[in-house]
Amino acid sequence: MENGAVYRPTTEEDPGPARGARSGLAACCNLGRLRLPRRVLKGLQLLLSLLAFICEEVVSQCTLCGGLYFFEFVSSSAFLLCLLMLIVYCTPVYDRVDAGKVKSSDFYITLGIGCVFLLASIIFVSTHDQTSAEIAAIVFGFLASFMFLADFAIMVYEKRQESQKRKPEATVRAEALTEPLNA
Image (cartoon, rainbow, N blue to C red):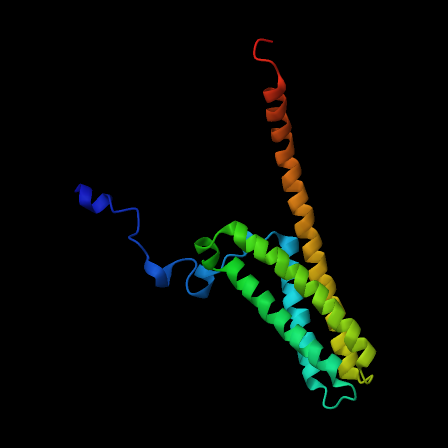
């Protein structure tokens, strides 16, 4: 028996992009950059702001339209900005930009959207005509604003935890600097 008949190559050549385990859209999508609670909150923010926008668009007539138009602008902007942040977190764009800048942008965008969405929902409550579409839009608007503010609260908590981890190192260094050299 020849060695060629018994021994064959045991490794496969490079399978290429079409045959890999993750191909197409799944290959460039990475959900692991956000922890599960933040991932769920981002998904809820996206869904609720879209539902608020859709319900608001169904409204056919209004008496005091200023609140409706402001709510429309805020809900559509919230949806688009949330979608943008999810795209940045889940695609290779995140690797091309500074991670600190992405997190900082997300921090301030989330705070801004949460506060303005809450304000828009309050204004819309005071100016709506009590149709079912308006009430549904208001409910989705309040829920979305609470999701944005909860996400902001989680980011504040994570920043505090991170600063607490760094704090002991700074105190040890400060103590080392205050001790006399010959002691």
